[in-house]
Length: 632
Image: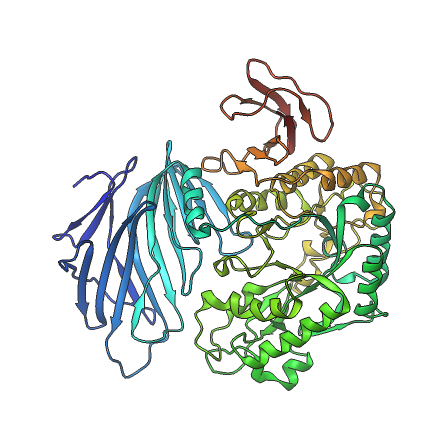
């Protein structure tokens, strides 16, 4: 039953057997659920057409297709539902359900910002896993990649569980909700084995096609959120803008000033609050007059209950199962309704809103919580949830024009290219070490998107900490107060400022932002940085942009420690990170990386580095890095 890179059908066991180089044969059977109930085992028979099998049961008629391509071996499940007295509300098609596979490492991918996880597998590992678009399972030198298309109508993903050194119950599933018609089809899941980076880049190349690389200018920016959050004021925005304009280095590299959450009356009522007494049109003009691009944060689908639109126009909201508007989303204890993107009236409302702010002079829009729309159970029109990003962003793009830039935050990647200019790839960053560790895998696993689908945004380049700031109010802001419960006797959230970043850790964060090749947005109270913190900010914005770095140990490590980047000028960068708690020695063979060995410089200290026998060796303190620049 072991065949090289092929599928066989075991009629006696009613299962399929997939044989790929480097892995034991994988046994699986297609499954399905209708309204949460498993349809039971399907008795498959060859149809006579190559790679096509058919089955029938009371639920409907089923077709299973096996497709061979240069990318790998693909599988899809189709169904024509039987006639029913009650309409079907949801169907889950599972074309691939692998019983068990031995692995050393698992890399999972998220649907939007953040959500990428890396698991070096040990005998004691027990972990539920979930992945979207692709999942990479590595054993030894070989990686097995299961993938779905990036552009999706009905949403698809992978789930399973790590138990010891095996992944069990690894399932590919397409969720069809709403169900439109009787003929249903899963997304094709493609399986291939080889080298991890080559598989990932091969998948990405197929999703991107023959489109030319993006030529979007990449200047740095400043954003109010990470330092000020909801306390931001018109005065503080202008104070930071004036500081940047007066700085001989920042003024040459920082292009935009973005006012984030906190300027508006509430979600759904996008009018300036009392902290912005001159109004947003006046503020945009002041920012533009200083030579910056004015930017604005808006969460276009969120509507708080006390907003006028919620109180007076509830018919514009997405619905719960009852068919009535529902509070379908919550963030930081703010519960919201969701606007229904499938309603023409909502699109008209967005058109008026964004034309107004573009008319004020805002040319950069950070659109947040876009993926929250998928939390609503029902919409006016039966649009697949995979198409919701297009329903939201097309009318907004038409309103702000092609001359404006859009950053998609919580953008769902199945929307693909063309809807946003930049896309957040990591979760929210904070000025503490654990947050840096949490985000690194999402930066590493999405290098293939940068410059090809959009400009990657790894979130803020934060510099502040005890060693890099003169700020007496550094810990005054308490962003986690919303989580303090009346019953708590030791409410740790009351005392948390989410600031615990020393200088070495700040260098790691900034190095990751730089080496990502993507957007760089400062988000500190810049006048309160000390000389050391200001030097970090200046060095970061001056760093040349380039390709997204490749994490060399992406398919083996919990947190990637070795990164390589190419720049258009001929400059190369190498990043080495010590994620551990003790001093560690690192040695890199530059010959195996085809990395230049002359003119090596430590980016942060600007000291020259020496190479011995083709190896670059260094000793790194805990939570520190070496960012190496090399000229050919």
